[in-house]
Length: 114
Image 1: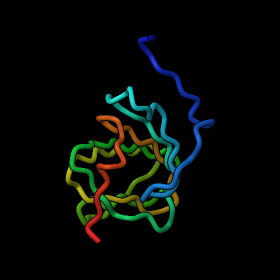
Image 2: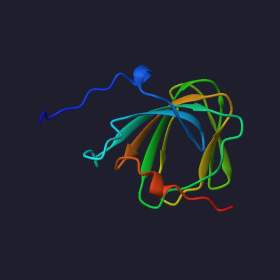
Image 3: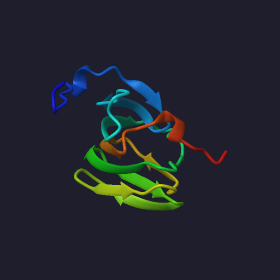
């Protein structure tokens, strides 16, 4: 077994998520450490939170807002946001982001208030 993983992110099959469409690199059962996602934010993104997961967003394209526990924070390219467990969040606007998830993304750790 190799001591590294490589993914070609533009070849990863996109999946729907509360924020829009996500391409999830390194999302495999034998990797509990971290995942990296390229997310195209949809206009109807849905506020959610995680109980265990910390996310780091890096805005690549577009301008808009990140809603963090009800507060709208303006973002533009190269804005970085660390979202800790328990923080209700969603991206607002036509954005493309990189999302680093630590530990690795687990769909069972996605929670909604409604």
